[in-house]
Image (cartoon, rainbow over all chains, first blue to last red; front, side, top):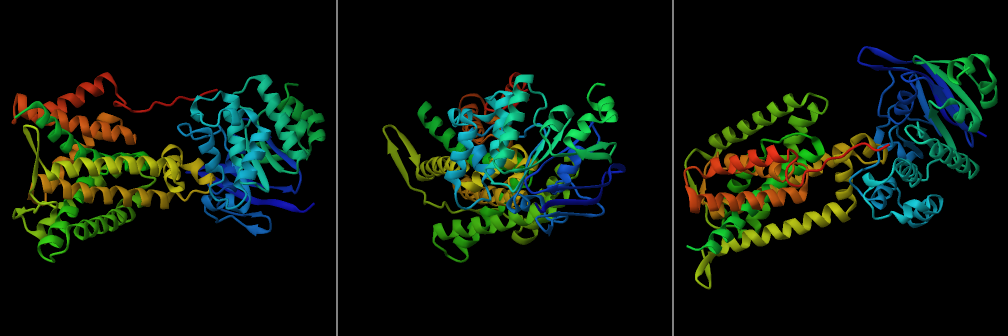
Length: 235
Length: 291
């Protein structure tokens, strides 16, 4: 199991606000790694820095042995890194199928196979293929956002708050899907406020607080840690 | 003079507005800016076509192609030099820059082409055909046909092609589009190139119908086409066509049945009324967050 993503010592600013402070973490091939923390802790900013939407002033981001710290955002996905962004960000005015087309924008071969795989995993998307994406329910939109990211056959799938705003039954469904994607061999970096659910599926986790990593460990260790319980798991 | 005659002329004028409005609306859709220099690109297109026809004696189709080519390069250059550096700036800064570019083009045209009126030779000759008791010029018919071709073409382009879909994706959400691997800067560039090419066609058709060409020829049609784009729902391609056609028809009817002097006032009054009733325009889209 080699390291697929290595984030080293990144510092990100929004104007004068120091949002991410000396953050380093890594993801091994085949793992689910989670970043947990409260609102504004720097979780999404970390993912957005990896995808090139934000820039770090220091350090480096290495993906699959290549330094991608200065790679433009639109060239990231073809390297095998896909992000399911916070708030889903599907193309609301396009159809379900067109959204999936966009997911495969940089892909060359095997479109039909990947589409078949995505439809097999999310049969609801096939049923709604021609529907305008903005008319889907929240849970369906999340599935579409995940399906869209999977259309690029990523080596590493990053998910930013996939359970946000969903009913409990849907949250459970989304985490089931994450587990099954992992079982099928996808490496996953998961950002969540729902720390309990995230740690339950993750191999390892990092806890962010006001832009810094304050602790890390295996999913189980963090679930059982007294400090984590107190801060994130409701005692 | 019959109702039908005015209607056909209204549709023809509306077709020109629609083609210009398309450029406004596509550029607005993707870069959320009002490119007020768009009207002046029309003027440049008309001048290029004029000189190609009169000075270099090129065949009409080649002259139109030359006008399109020059306008496409011009549109791309304007975007690169004037708007791209302002991608992160406030919309007011971009708006003022666009007005600046507009004045720049007009004044360059004054210097290069002189303020003298050029009489534009119609691109399809001055022939007329009679249909029943009304006589319609070739230009009118050609204008309507060109508009239909462009409308069908743009619908297919944005609906079926990869780059067309990428344009729609960028219009909706640039960050998400980048995550898909879409080069947003290149896509914006392509949008300006297409819009400017269409502006050249509109300029040729406009001057074939109303043959006086001066450096400010593009301003008023530009503003009216902008009105048409807002009228139809800015950002919406079918909206640009609907808005353009309606505006042309309203303008001709106002001229024919009410008063030539206040026809423009009537056109803008209609815009105000539509926006009061439906602020997003006739086909404007509203999106809402779902949970």
